Image 1 (cartoon, rainbow, N blue to C red):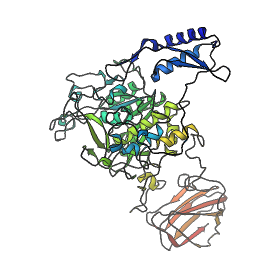
Image 2 (image 1 turned 180 degrees about the horizontal axis):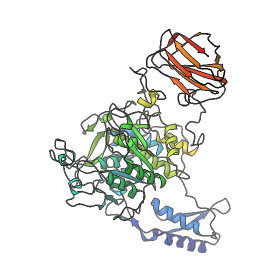
Image 3 (image 1 turned 90 degrees about the vertical axis):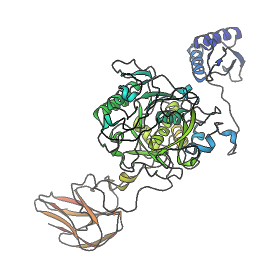
Image 4 (image 1 turned 180 degrees about the vertical axis):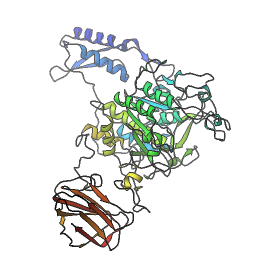
Amino acid sequence: MDFRDTASANRSIGQAVTRAGINAGSSSSLPGAAAPVASAALLRRMGMPGWSVIKVSRSLSSVEEAAFIRELKANPSVERVERDELMFPSAAARASASALPNDPDFSRYQWNLNNPKYGVHAPEAWASSKGEGVVVAVLDSGVAKGNPDLEANVLPGYDMVSFKEMSRRGIDGRVPGGWDVGTWVEENYCTQLTGETHPAERSSWHGTHVAGTIAQLTNNSIGAAGVAPLAKVLPVRVLGSCGGLTSDISDGIVWAVGGDVPGLPINPNPAEILNMSLGRPDTPVCPQAYQEALDFANDKGAIVVVSAGNRDTGAMTQTMGSCEGVLVVASSTFQGEKSDFSNKGWPTVLAAPGGNEVGRGSESGEATSFIWQMINGGDRGPEPGNWMLEGYAGTSMAAPHVAAAAAMIQSVAKSPLNLREMKVLLQRTASPLSKSPVPTSVPFPPPAGITLEEIFGIGPGILNIAAALRELATPTCDLEKPSCVDRCDPVLTDCGPGTAPVPLLNKRAIIVQGKRSTESLFSFDARAGQVLNFMTYGGSGDISMYVSYGKNPTIVTAEARSSRRKSNIETVRFQAPKAGTYYIRLAASYLEDYKGVTLTARQ
């Protein structure tokens, strides 16, 4: 494009405006309003040769802007197009209320976004990303239609609930939309499905609350804020009255990422992120239908975020926690601790704010006990105009923080992160908990090869979106590496040369001792073909013995082991040993020291 000739330059700019469609006007985010047609023209040339400034007659939406830039770049005479960004003084710090969104409930209720220590650091993150251009599928009870603080960010979804008894739509089958028409149940209504009696319950609007955390409109002077306010929500209704069926949920996963589900149209807006704040407690086996659907979603590049569950037990006991290809999220509190109700342990990835209590809150309740978003106030079906701020607590509330963070990351990543890279980035940048949930001692030792962290932990800490985006922009090391610090755990890995082992002599006893949770390494040069015994006895404490030929033994790789519970009497025997060096590792219990224990090698 020859910008030296103003007339020809403006003709080319006008053609780009026409091809981008911005001269036809566009819909506004405000009901009943429409953006006027736009025009553009050469404003001036810059001092740097070749650079010029183009002025557009009005602000463009993100979609319009992207289209206009794309059409400018399509001109073979144009080498580069950049947005004319605003720059600001690089002041180190200055607090101002105007730096925060004007949503009236943000400052009072949304500690989960703005608490400087144990929130997710959303306001800082918004300077880098708001999730623009990313679709997040919410597989849940659907989204209540007409929410003034959310609907502008809701894409056409689908109601996958097959049976009218659960869907409350009066007919069997699936329908477009993904709207939540209510999940209420009369007393014992679900007994026909579960065989169990139950009280009546009003509609939960669970999916609306979850979707609000992800992408509720922000800085619009209404209600509360969303974590990724420029992301789009794809409602996939898979839960109705009494719950949701595996078949409906599995089809929902496939449809959400653009897969072909018989009888349904292909989703025109495939999701990059899936949030599944659902599961069945005490079911530590992933249904194959789920796993195959999740594998399909992973193959499509989707990041699947799931809740850990709310029974203060192992995350593996929640259905989704037992599945592969998911990011399992635990719940943290305003005080930066594990929520009392939150499930824990492997395979939990990290924590995110979920509140202090399980159940519905109220505006009059303690603001910091719950996660607050706008829902419908209808007890059964949605009631037009009846919108209210409501506080919920649970790992269902924690997971959408991570789903929104993933959307914000994918929005600005040079290329989309895969599941492992996303996990590493989120874990590497997590904020520390105020108090570790891992106990210093337990009544019984865990199975060999299992750590207390894997039983009681909830990952490295609490989601910190601002830190994750900074690390994404300037990574300190490859995202294939769990840590930028090269550490080696000698208990689990052969770390190569290290502390020299203490040599043992045949039938020569030595006295050993060690502090709790420490290890000691010994060696013995054996002959071939003659029975070889390693033994510990006497003294006090609790130890385990791990033995390997030719290399340091680990809890995982040891050729032989002896780990009697609450005992310092251990024996490892080789009936036909090889000639060469055997290495013996003594590992102290995490419960107590060991003292005065005799160690011998006999051959």
